[in-house]
Length: 306
Image (cartoon, rainbow, N blue to C red; front, side, top):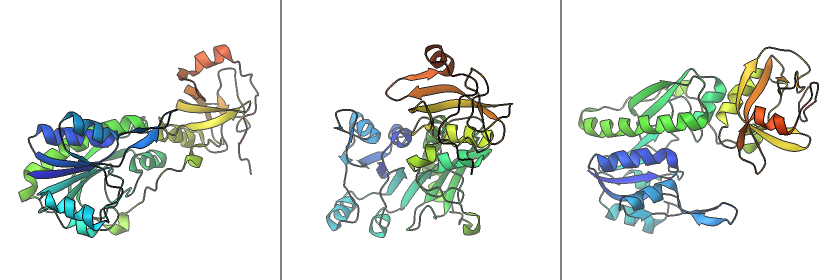
């Protein structure tokens, strides 16, 4: 089919690649415009733009899809279908109505759970045992359209980064299969009464409060790894925690229980295993402690004991 692909981050790349490899005619890849990044703040193309250009696919990067000229250019491509994966821009009804078979979305949750911008992180934070991918027929509402296919995977002890990569591959293959079966599929309406929402992550959520249970904090660590990284302060320095384990032990929350940086929490204790200092590479906590000892009984800043 004549297909328009719409996506921006790394999560979307496997779907773009799978569609191209499956022989679909990708008439254009829509992605968000290049953004400044790195120390020099140079404009960096999105992962989807990079992949599309490697594969010789025309790239378009409108700032908005609400412009009549942009909509006219979209229609001129005469798409049979549009495939959307983490595009990051709202598709107005005028765009949704253009493709012959509508717009299909690869969403990283089992809908109607975790509609919205950060389904993977919210699923980990909530302690879900299982998550997955839903292929949905898009409509004007936020991730509210009829469901065409789903696939599940256990969350286990995966980080958001690991789960994102896994779900991206699952979603890519699920979309290819959905397009093959599309003439036979009938969308299943979502049950709005079971819906939950996954708002965009606020960086303030990444600050660790050791007054909370250790199991909750360990999920916070996984949900924000690799970005933005759950963190605490030690001697005025921000320390990101990229991997941690829940351990036994009790004490005043936010206080180290030994010289291995085991930290007392509101319930139980947490031992960081992989950390990152500001401007430094990620390292094992044991390596960090060889260069900077943290004595038992050290009180970490920022714990809310109210």
